[in-house]
Image (cartoon, rainbow over all chains, first blue to last red; front, side, top):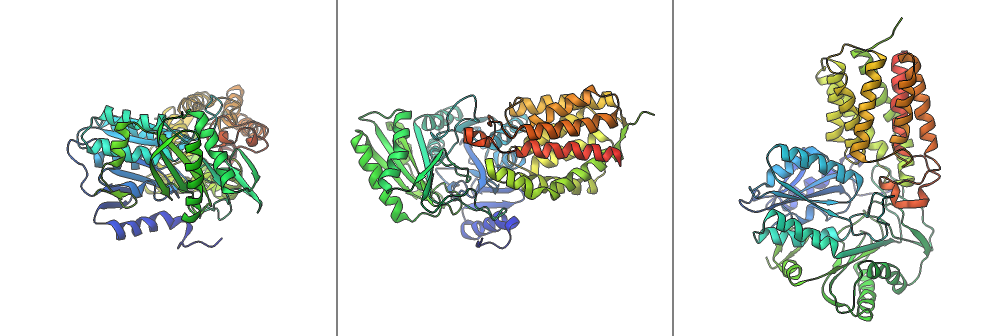
Length: 333
Length: 208
């Protein structure tokens, strides 16, 4: 498998060097341990926001470090959770005296490592509140699974909680707003092709030329089922129906609609999907007040998309609109 | 003659386990690709390499300190679920063996029991969830039932192997494989597999 890399075990470090070269004016980049910290951190009196996870989902999380969003991101190896010492270093680097929020996607590894980091930070006198994202309706939320995965809603939590922190809200308030975004958001994804990690060099699953995989995760995990590839309208229905039923979204709800590319999907196709999402939302009586379309939480070169709907209220909408100045998300700045 | 494990024996065990993680790296990657995210072999190999480097750099004074050094290295280099879980295992195993130059069966079994309890508390996995616990629990049970260290570790390795194979038909209830539901059945659990190699190398280290 061909890839634009120098060596499989150097890919994260090499990418961080690129981020340093491109955004060194606004981010501090550390290679040991891997860390991206907003240049003016810690901001005195502001709640710090730290997230992190395996690499391979770019621009998440490193691309969201900056004013109005994250204070620091901890990148792990490709699809591998970062480690507690990275998270502790990030937490200490961004603690402005008002406490630190950890935004954690619900995966066993991420949860275990962030738990250890929060214990260590507590031991050093830093108050940590954790916001867990688990918005993927493709996974049954039951005692018999690790619970729902954190996917698209994570980007929205980082933006909205980041704006709340920037506005001077307290640790508990920022955490509560983050949890509300997670509670009011639902996502589901699909793939046309698998992805290939640099280390394995092999596809994460096998998919026939005429098949699609519905309900995939963002680490090349296979989904809930596969079926004959159909038109975009059918794919949008497959994803939207469980999302709409799960919350449930009701006629008259104001929503943010987020159509996300998995890394290898042309924007042209994402807009085709968005047209279907808008059609289905309208038929359901939803009012799409805000939208986001593009590659924001990816799975290497996978072709496919995910859809996230977030039920908005005045506060969430105001924080969504607030200025943000990061490498990957920027407005009002 | 009663055999005991000493500092050199624990060190030999870690060398053999690191060697096993390197040799079986691709096998673990393949097992993890089938029902997880395909990084288990790479991560364990990287972590154990670093752990051995650490043991070369500063020689810990006793078996407990040695295992603690391995634990801290795995926690800070492996990531994923395996880092905290294997880190927790070695941390608690080491805590039960601190300040001992020679470890007998009773002390070893007791330390292993504490380590398994700690792993289960950290990962909240139970027997039959299709995780490393399915190899760990029967291995420690076998060790406790044994009359000698040599027989105990041989029995533990065999029990871990059976536990590992018994994960094949199971439906995963913890970890990333649980997302697959019924589709996780028919695949051997990669965590149970690396745990089997842990006991196999322990038995081998004592025999050599």
